[in-house]
Amino acid sequence: MSQHDDILVEEQFEQKKISKRTFRRLFAYTLPYKRIVWLNLFLTIGSVISQLLGPKLIQYGIDHFLSGASNLSEARKGILLVSAIYLLNLLVGWFLSVVQVKSAIKVGQGAMNDIRLRVFEHIQKLSLNYFDKTHQGRIISRADSDVDSLDRVMTWGANQLLASLLTLVGVLAVLLRYDWRLCLAVTVILPPLAIGTRLFHIHATAAYRRTRMETSRMIAALAESIAGVKVIQAFAREEENLSRYREINRVVSDRAVHAAKIFHTYMPFLGIMSGLGTVIILSYGSYLVNRHELTVGELAAFILYLGMFFGPIQTMGDLYNSVLSAGASAERIFGLLDTVPQVQNRPTARNISRPRGEVEFTHVFFRYDTTPDDRWILDDICLKAAPGDMIALVGATGSGKTSIINLLARFYEPQSGIIKLDGKDLQQITTHSLHSHIAIVTQENFLFTGTVMENLKFGRPQASDEEVIQAAKTLGTHDVIQRLEEGYATKVRERGANFSAGQRQLITFTRAMVADPAILILDEATSAVDPGTEALLQGALEKLFARRTSFVIAHRLTTVQHANEILVMGRGRILERGTHSELLSRKGYYADLHAVFMQSHD
Image 1: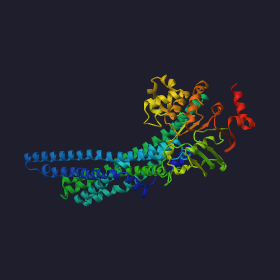
Image 2 (image 1 turned 180 degrees about the horizontal axis):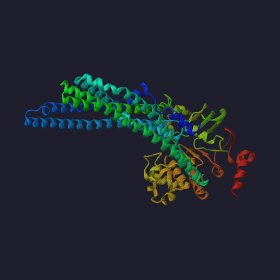
Image 3 (image 1 turned 120 degrees about the vertical axis):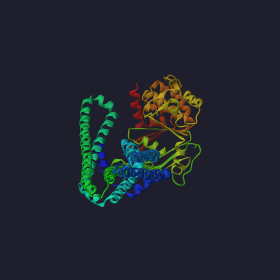
């Protein structure tokens, strides 16, 4: 399935009703803030009461001090008093709203922050097989946009729903108390209001989903172009890519305009319904006033309360859409959190102290989840490395070399067979304890943002600067690092973009040495190092290899000539094994590889 197809499938679930189970799980993230939640709800009730008091005060002022007032001086004093009380009520309502908003933000953002941390924590625990079959963009979306889509519901959902319901109930109760006949007259506008609101939600939801789908396409196209910019420039595809992106951008713009038209058609419709309701009240209300069945103040208050009736309807409609979007996002987030890592600590797993480094594979079979035709990536692998041994893995791409070290580091689990460290099954050792005694240097030479020194201490943060510098001197990388712009304090840009491939490789090599591992794994570790630098490293490597068990994957056969055992891999099997001289004397596959290598370096 293509990335675009994945987006289409995911967008089909962009909005869905939130299940009880999902709601309970979301609600659980607010429990640490339950005192603030209760305070927030109490403040919301107070704010609504304050809001409902406003028209009542106006009605009182009109009926008692304006309509039919006999003493102008007393009327003026009464109006000033009512105005002061009205202003005080506004200030109290404003204060309650400010505190309520602050408490709502504290609860919502606190809960969302907890969700983000939980997602980040879980992502770091997932096994590599999950990342093998899941788009990076989708994983980032779970921790970013999906969490952001919960903002409206987590922050404002409870108090907006409570405020809207209280306002509607309060307004209806007050209106009925004033005159049930006016309430009945206003119901004329309810059927068209209900139909219009329903149509708005149907068309707005569809427009929103289409806009999100096209926006996802645009983001995917942008991410793909950024990731493949070198290839795009190499094949002079800039204009073609711009043309494709321009078309996607045009569609996104059209969808957004369509959604905006729907929204800005509905808002005037609400205004028309509100105006129609006001006309009905004024017409019929004036008739009742003339018959002395309703006071002028009550009519004015009735109109003001009617104006308060439409706001909660719009708020609850918007909140409903937000709940639908949040429901889909929450289910995707919890789907990630419910993903069980393939590699987990057994209940009986224990931490280990520094191992001696004896490694043994016994009849190991392994394949990745995405392996076509059920082919074994590793087929009945048996090997043994004594403490301090250097085991070299050579062979063509796809022969299974990297899979062996992936299993040794327990990034994956074999389908069958046993892998032991110092005689203990790896599954009886906690993964954190195992990884703390293994260092891996790959050809990807990944660096993190920060300083060079911080990167060198990544595997052993407690190491002193002196220990780091000594490790660099032992490896012969100290002079290279010192020549950087600020030496060990040089800032590392994203992914080490400000260093050459060779510099990044030397830094990652030193980082592994600072970690002081019991088992050292080099996966094409010298691929980005020039032959001159590699020659300088050979002496240091021999000393380091002598103190720890090492597994080395290398196409440069000069790197593996001194290995205690060389394993020649082919289609997941060990085709040949032995020392460099033994394999050359057999004139087999390794001898052919060596001959080709020597010929290419003449």
